[in-house]
Image (cartoon, rainbow, N blue to C red; front, top):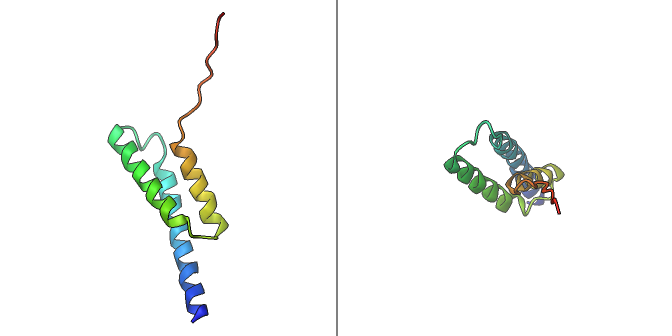
Length: 82
């Protein structure tokens, strides 16, 4: 029974790795230009993160972090002249 559970978890992790890599490729600015595309990307990233939360596979956790970083707004350097 435990072996079956381990096999299922491994298969799920492989699925998550493949899914995370696809979502990461879709996060390219060339592919997500419109507001609707960015919103769909954010939903996909959030759904991936929910699924990845229970994984202990380091590849899944790394992809989750990379995808979360995609959602973070870029920082801009603002110079003050005063």
